[in-house]
Amino acid sequence: MASPAPRRFPDGFLWGAATSAYQVEGAVATGGRGESIWDRFAHTEGAVDGGGTGDVACDHYRRWRSDVDLMASLGLNAYRFSIAWPRLFPSGAGPVNPAGLAHYDRLIDALLARGIEPVVTLYHWDLPQALQETGGWRDRDTAARFAGYARECFAAYGDRVRTWVTINEPWIIGVLGHQLGIHAPGERDLGGSVRAMHHLLLAHGLAVQALRAGGGDGRAGVAYSLFPHEPASDSAADLAATEGSDGYVNRWFLDPVLRGEYPADMWRRYESALGHPLDWVRDGDLETIAAGADFIGVNYYTTRVMRAAPDRPPFGWEVVPVPDGTPVTDAGWAIVPSALTGLLLRLHRDYPRVPLLITENGGVFDDAPADPRRVGFLRDHLVAVHEAIAAGAPVAGYFHWSLMDNFEWAMGYAPRFGLVHVDYETQARTVKDSGRYYADLIRTGAVR
Ligand code: IFM
Image (cartoon, rainbow, N blue to C red; front, side, top):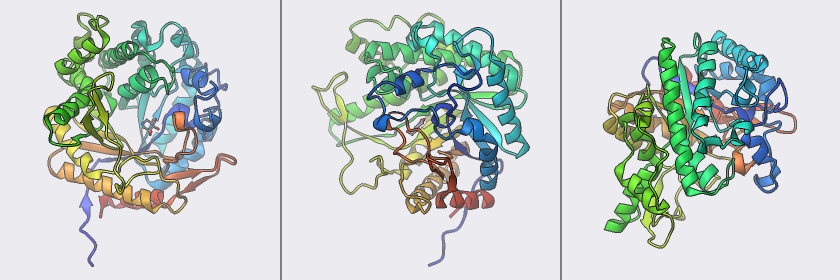
């Protein structure tokens, strides 16, 4: 059978892979780094499967030179990584720590020297613990602190970094960290979570204002964890549950940044679940949040199939378990590449003219170095991205999650997401078949 015709991606497409500081850096007590909420949380008994912490992780803080060589050998033209806020501001505020500043300075220069564009995330969950002690994201002042930290990054690196992701996955931070307590800071309070999520969006807006005030040509966006939704049936109740959950997961974050308003249906739902107004939202906040975004960062992993569950708090709906026989990753997440096409086209329709960047996409597959399932996952998702581009969606790049196996938060080190295998005993890196497949694809600029 003839192989399918190559689907070519636009010139200038960013072919990248992503990581985040706490998941790969290790060296948590080196170079004057302060404690983060993830250090504190991971060291809490029972918080992380297998008792893992980010103390060593992939030792990327020390091995960054050879890791940049590895990226170059794969032909990546972009690398998305995050700056650890507690490396720059060990106690959240005060003078910047020169050793922390110098570390990312060298990394950025090394990337650029290899023709790899640095795409820098400012907040990928490692809040300085000192700021948690003054209320963390529940405290409005944390948004102002974030803006100060962002300003410092723009001043130090803005001559070389063009693309900034302000906040990674505000919904996950709110839900897992503040509502369900399974991520740092381990809080369980619905109101606290809604409040924290508002301050995260405010932090984004303040950072965008700071970036614009600096006068450079940098662009900024939020990386959202977006879940396409489907109803379990055509019943009115399941359709309402699906629309409601889409408000909870997706629209609550997209609408304020891109339209300057919270979705009214979800606002009512939160007020009724909490029994009081969302009085932490102050006059002028939405104007700040709607300072906007130069792109939408799309983190896509799987879908949510929803059904009504009237007795289920807080909103009377639930996610339907993945049916037997559905293709899943080793984390049990359904593999649905076509939903990525739909998601990109929906974003293009609902928030027109905003460029889209796939800031994360990947799956847990334990096989290595031969990992045919990840090769298939990568191919099928890139075909899905190509279909969206062909239908008019302005997708500017794709970042695979992840460059290498790393610390998967509360799930510890067992789930492996990498294009590159990491032996955590020796820190040896081995490129998986998926890494080689991705390198070939980048070389040709096309997927078959
Ligand atoms: O590892 C995480 C990443 O930190 C944020 N997005 C989802 C990934 C996989 O769970």
